[in-house]
Every structure is written in structure tokens, then in C-alpha cells.
Amino acid sequence: MGSDAARMMDAKGGTRVAMVMAAIKQRIAARSLTRGDKLPSVRAFAGTVQVSTSTVVEAYDRLVAEGVIQSRPGSGFYVASPAAPLALSAIEPKLDRAIDPFWVSRQSLDAGGADLKPGCGWLPPSWLPEEGVRRALRTLSRADGPALADYGSPLGLPPLRQLMARRIGERGIDASPDQIMLTESGTQALDLLCRFLLEPGDCVLVDDPCYFNFHALLRAHRARIVSVPYTPAGPDIALFAEALREHRPRLYITNSGIHNPTGATLSPVTAHRVLKLAEQSGLTIIEDDIFADLEHSSAPRLGAFDGLDRVIHIGSFSKTLSASARCGFIAARPDWIEGLIDLKIATSFGGGRLSAELVFNVLRDGSYRKHLEALRLRLSRAMIEVGARLKSLGIEPWLEPQAGMFLWCRLPEGIDAADVARDALAENIVLAPGNAFSLSQSATGYLRFNVSQSQDDRIFEALRRSITQRACP
Image 1 (cartoon, one colour):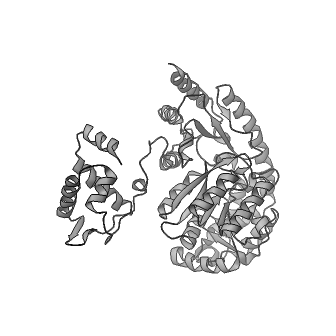
Image 2 (cartoon, helix red, strand yellow):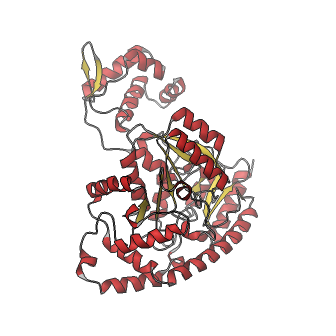
Image 3 (cartoon, rainbow, N blue to C red):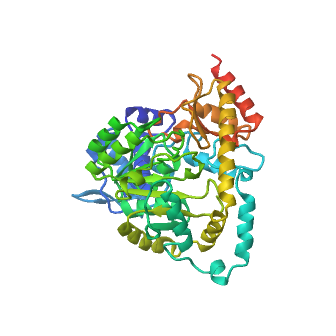
């Protein structure tokens, strides 16, 4: 906040004193300042927000009167009130609601049956193996009592872990079943790893753009996030190395199969360079492989090249089997799995046995592989059809993905994706503007399209109207 922020507050009828008070309260709400922390000195804070020292003195006095802070003569001012419940929206500057990742998620999850969701990140129910899930449910209905009622073990259902060891082995990742821990979802897997590996203030490296919930989860863990531009072959290696030197990140979180949102795949050369830099700097890597089953041929995996030494491999079954059956996994080195088991007990106690049993019954059914073959073909056709329709509107894919469900597309020059998203929302169409995925906010002109959810003519008519209107001088 500087003189511009102060002038803006004045223009809105606020006062400089109110501005200073709001800034302190925002820091407390975001937990940048917690109970007992010392506030900046009057002179220092006046210089930061570019107001007079008398303004800060008055603001501090009012905060003392409200009980928010307390004065300790000869020492300074300290936070007095207990920490407020964590408000993720207060951690970062507020974004326009059309590009806020929480807005995208909420609109997609809350959308009714008649709403269109080309911006969401999952397949339509009709594209999933519904009959296979029904067969598995019928099998489970005849299972013994423990399968239906007991807690699962913290490590997870043994036969599913054995199956997962074989499945990730097909992608070159060598892990025993005891190196695999089941979780309630891919998101819970990432959450557990952040709890296990991070302290508040630690730096984490992400791609730019990247899956927007990486940003939200890392903010919840009070991490300091730094992004590196992503290229069609992986992260920009020169800037990746520069970020390691400058910021000394603790973690790097990425997709190394099918990248979200770009649809790119990691090249072997880039993978080896990333791992060499990680080894030199002591960096731990989490690779989220949630779209693995959508690949026609396996892309390089960092966990395969690294042998799960400093790479942790995670995934789930929500994209190709069912988002209702919440089941994910972590594959990591044995000593880390031991620590994660304790953390899982502390945060969720036993595993979700019913979901694990359901997933296992579907995966061991030969029809699941046939489902995947048909799904990949269906997505390939949709990718071509949707890409062609978007191009006819002047919306150009950043690249032609080898597989997956996403097209990362650039709008015609000068058109803001947030404006297009607002226009579409008025017609009950949920889009995903680029800046929701970009920490640097450098994707103003981009949208992510889910080709499986972009089959309705109304989507393209709404895009045409919005682009035509926005392109007019």
C-alpha cells in the first residue's frame, strides 16, 4: 500500500486512519500477525503506507481502544486479540470474482444440472464407468461387516496398494506396496505432504500457469509461493534455476504427466535437468499424476528417473472412475511413509475403507481398461472438434495436447478472459479464466476449456457474442 492506495481510500470517503486500521486488521486476519506479535514501529509503518506518523499514532490508539492491539510502554504495540479464523481470501489481495480460483471451484461444484461447465476440471458423469461402479457396489453390498463398517488401516487397503504398485510400475516408478499410502483424495494427499514437509513461511515453487487449487492449498499452509513460467516441454529451466538460487524453495509442485491447465507433457531432457537442479539445491518435488489414465503413451515421470528419492508421486481416481469415491494415494520413500502414517492418524484417523474397496473392485474388473481405451478415443475426438470450433471464433490453443481433456487457449488480442467469463456466467455458463491459474497474473487473455464439457452449441454462441461485443471499439 502506498500513496495511491491512500488516495483511493480518501476518494471513497474513507480516511487515512481507517486505512491504517484496516491494514493492521487485514494482517491479523491473514495471520501475518498473530497474538503476541509486535507491530511495526509508528515511524516504520508510516513510511510503509506513506502517511504521517500522527496518522499511525491515531490508528494505533483506536486499535488499542478496540482491544485489537495493546500498548507496552517503552516497548511498542503488540497484537492483543486472539487469531481470527483463517480467511484465505484475506491472505492475498482480493481478485476479481471472475478470476478467483475459489469462485471457479464454487461455481463449478454448485452448478445445477442445466448449467454448462466448460471451465470445470472433471468429466461428465456419462463419460465415467457407471456400470462398473454399480457392479462394484453390488459386490460390496454382499461383503462382510468389516468392509462396510470398520475403519481402514492408516496405510490403506493392502490389495489396492498392491495393485497401485503394479500400475505405477507401468510408468517406470518402482515402489513396493509398503511405499504407497492411500488417502481420501489427491487433494488430501497434497495437504498431508504440506503438513509433513512445510513450516509457515517456507517457499514453494509452482508452474505458471498451474492448477489453481495448488495456490489455495499453499496459502492455507502459510507458504510463500514463487512461480516459474511453463513451456511446452516443462518449466523454463533457466528461470527455474534462477528461482532456486534466489528463493531456496523447500518444495516444487507440478504435473509431470498431462499438465493442468496447459495439456503439455514434460520432455525427458527437461526432466533430467529439473532433477539435477533439485539435487544440487536440496529441493523436494511433488508430482501430481491425477491424469495418468488419460495418456495414450506414458510421458516421462520424475519419480521414475529419481527412484522416489526426492520425488513424491501422488494421484487419485476422481478423473476417470468417480469423484464421489474419494480415494487417492501417495508413493514415497519408506521413511517418509512412516511419518505420513502418523500424520494421517492425527488428522483423519483410519482410512476410508469403503471407498478403497469400491475403487479396488472397479480397477480389478477388466472392463475398466476397456473403458479407458474408449475414453481416450472419445477425448481425442472431442479435442479435435472443440479445438476447431474455438479456432473459428479466433480462440487459439496454446498447443495441441497429446492427450487429456484440457485446451489452454488464447483469446483474440485485447480481450480480457475475466470479462468473457462474466458474460458467460450471465448465461449460466462457467468458464475458467487464465489468471485463476497464474500466480503472476500474466494469463489475462487465456481460458482453459474442458473438451468433454464443451459439447453444447450454447457455449460457442455465448463466446461468439462476448468476443464480438468486446472486440468492438
